[in-house]
Image 1 (cartoon, rainbow, N blue to C red):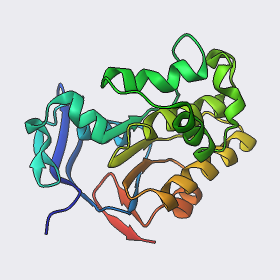
Image 2 (spheres, rainbow, N blue to C red):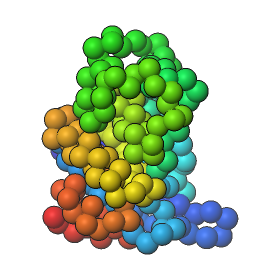
Image 3 (cartoon, helix red, strand yellow):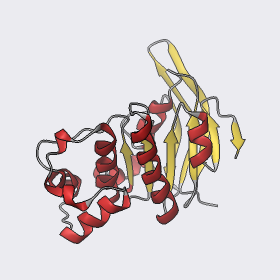
Length: 215
């Protein structure tokens, strides 16, 4: 059986320090897997390995049965998009930020598609002409999610998407993520330090040690 995403015997060593070893993970379409573990255990590193931003010391990552090293980097990072812990906004408006990811891949979205992407993450489409840098932390995170969704990824990688937000913003971002999971036929990997949040969103939890827990 070919999985959407497979990590096999992944280890990462920096200088003489082994960050983790023997990490395995499978991800299927329409599945959400949470990655948990103590601070500094390498959870975010795993996501960077998945999109080939870091090369593991040992192990293999397969996307749809093919090693990620066989994919052209731009193609890989459209199919699997990493949304970082703190969303970066580029100079300009929300519209400019939504079009930014598309422009890298020489794509364009209609006004209606931009508005639909905002609605999917619970943002009012009237904010398209707002200056992105003036948005709240939670709004920026949701714009980053919308920017990723416009590229129609097959895997969405979320790196502690609410860790820097207050409670109200956390609930708004969680609601947006929940809608995405419910409506899109994609696989989702979410790194979280919050066990309650992981339980709400995930089908399975995978500890950085490789131990798996059913929901």
